Image (tube, rainbow, N blue to C red):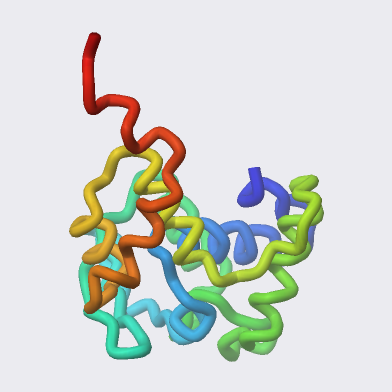
Length: 165
């Protein structure tokens, strides 16, 4: 829903792709603005994620939806070293990412302010869909399992499948 909310804008492709990549891979704003095309392996469908704050680097698979969006983005900005750029070809700023995500949240009809710190949303989504804590930890690049465990503590259905009566 929030990814589709940027379609009408001049940089809608860039903005939609940014939100999609941030959410699916649990990226911080600093990681988004620093993403370079050399980190994307389109033929193999992989994204090489360099984590901040002493996080663990990882290689994530890219879905078909992500690959299509990234290919379109590459065609739209063929000379850029960075994935997400301004009209002048430089990397977008942290403030721009905050505006993009906030605007997408409003356009999607979300009634509270949406901010670009998406790791919690990604963690909660994965936990609510039955992904084990260690896998979530690795996906988000967390060194300490305690920083990941909080995403599973609030999963409303976490005990539902323990017993089959």
